[in-house]
Length: 236
Ligand code: HEC
Ligand code: HEC
Image 1 (spheres, helix red, strand yellow):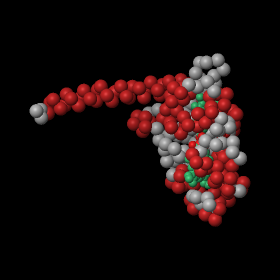
Image 2 (cartoon, rainbow, N blue to C red):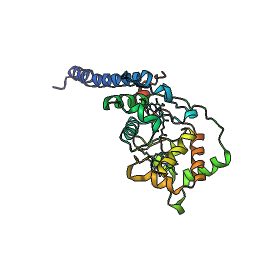
Image 3 (tube, helix red, strand yellow):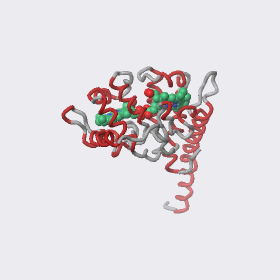
Image 4 (cartoon, helix red, strand yellow):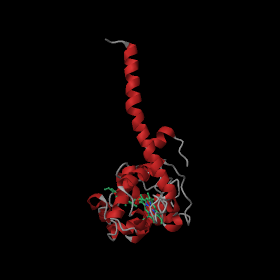
């Protein structure tokens, strides 16, 4: 019964007929997502994601567009749904994502989760005094005001805890500050249990600026996308 060649044939069959179709499905999804990123969906009025986020997902600090490269696919899809459903107020994005189907969202999320991008240059250099204040809040929190250390949820040095806690290291500072304001003033209400809304509201404006300066001054983590890790060669 324990014929080794039979086992070889059997495992070859299993690898061939189960793993390959799965990899192919991932490939199809990635390519479909790349197409939307590059050229839009083809529907009337569709705008390509790369117009604002770049093809490699590095974002554009000058227009307040975030980097999204290597954010988890689940997080990216969650944010797009939030914009579609209005729990996240984002006027520049709303028209763009209105017509995306669930399948389009899944594809484009898989694509951007898998690509890598270096940090895109900021519009102004970091303010060293604010960076230091921000570092302390990020690493230790402000317990007197019931604000936990940001790194507890956003991972060591803000590198993210996928799939639900986004990385914020290396994100552009204008975007970071605007998100903290959106949470504080309830324009963004898609955070689980209102965790970020409470924290953002309890920070002073100076403290919000400080944490934004601090996280923006760090390097972004390398893409966490499974495909990028496996193949390492996706630099479109
Ligand atoms: C016209 C410019 C523009 C286009 C085109 C655009 N975006 Fe955006 N996107 C933005 C801006 C600006 C924000 C920040 C919104 C805010 O301030 O909350 C954003 C936010 C996002 C976020 C949230 C990121 C985060 O860290 O929470 C995701 C995900 C995203 N966009 C994905 C996409 C995808 C996918 C496409 C293509 C289908 C796309 N965007 C097309 C401008 C754009
Ligand atoms: C208790 C957990 C928790 C803590 C502590 C926390 N966050 Fe968050 N944060 C989250 C979650 C969850 C999200 C994603 C919300 C969503 O799904 O839209 C988030 C989102 C964010 C975003 C938006 C990221 C993006 O790409 O749009 C920023 C900016 C942010 N947090 C900054 C901070 C800062 C600064 C601190 C420390 C002062 C902090 N967070 C502490 C849980 C936390």
